[in-house]
Length: 554
Ligand code: N01
Image (cartoon, rainbow, N blue to C red):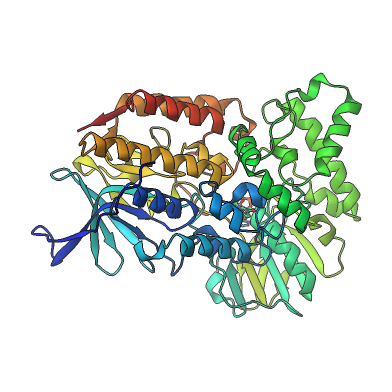
């Protein structure tokens, strides 16, 4: 990328608005998380005037908000950091194979400081509306509190899981003890010692927080609606020798990620589960279960996420492990999923999660059998019992993928609202552009490979592709780019076609936009892209090399 001197924004009178002046930028980025920070860095390199608008009061995105105890990577730390700067790679040392949230947040602060990113970031500012003005090909953004900015390019870096959802349970506000949503965890430390604590939710977040609370709470009650298939993380510190090896092998690490379906260091095995003998299969599962990270999900036989019979063999293997690890057979049975197979929902990685249920101070409540009826001043009442509590932790998930977009009133050409356009599910070109919404780019947006990926690996690709396109436009004096209807239709069809064979689409999860706390949000539809990061990158590169076919320029 050619580095140019960065332009300064201009402030102009705006005759069509009540506000006295509007600052004009070349580009506005919404969000200062992993993707937004890198997008800022790249657009600066192109010499654009850029403003990042961030709701939080500091950088970090998901790692800023999700401060709950136990929050950490499921990606190997060294596969998660930015790859664009050799200097950064050599300066930063990850202390664990799977870094904890405080360390990751320190890392993102280190990046922001090193590249002096904060001077272009406006913190504590939530964008409420974005309207495309056809006359001057400009986006006008409204910010909570009344101020506005405008920019030729609008780039969303909202995060796929940034809008937490609370359950619709009667009486939630009446509880007199402490209540926390994991994705809005306070900055002050929360002490569980000697307390009666409830956790609602057993997704990847619930599993991480349960492991921590169980260590010190007097009593932990887990309210589980659907058990998930979890697998061991096998975290550990990185010693000096390993650190040196990691530093020396970054090119190979990133190359491995580039070639893997999900941008992780784990690549699917070439064999089919049902082609090998039962002994060979069992030995392979055993090996993967003993290894770090997502190998058992991403590095397994290539048919286990496609073929139900193959998947059954893996689920049975993991069920056996759960039975071995949980002493009480009744509890083990409650913890084994029955309505979906291993890996067909996001696999929570765990550290002694199942052993938690062998502890005297931990109780598991199956709320499908005995539903929560209400939250009271004193605790939680199910159809079978009342639980007196000091604290309730809601690990109840997110309005995934499209939620961040729905919280901004985005209008494109002819006043069309994005929310209306996507009412039956997202329609995009490459998960990055939308017909009717020119000069808008959606990093890690719906139907983008980044959503089913080790996010930094794929979001770097997104950012570089968008930067390339913006660079192309400036080089050719183009003011406006918009996906064509035909390109959008073709991509959307391809997204659904490539997801069809995956078992993900047969079960209920946020991958399908299903969240019981958002009744009527939309019909279930696949929100990610399951065709694989390498295919996606190839497609993006091919489009760029053909003068961005599928994009209409003015
Ligand atoms: O959210 P979830 P999450 N009453 O939607 C339950 C990423 N992540 O925050 O399954 C009772 O998966 C709900 O039950 P059910 C990762 O991509 C990454 O845990 O709907 N229960 C479920 O058990 C992950 O997939 C890391 O029946 C209710 C849970 O709450 C994504 O974030 C760490 C309920 C929600 O699970 C989301 O995970 C953590 C209700 N009304 C998360 N409503 C890393 O390691 C919901 N539930 C990087």
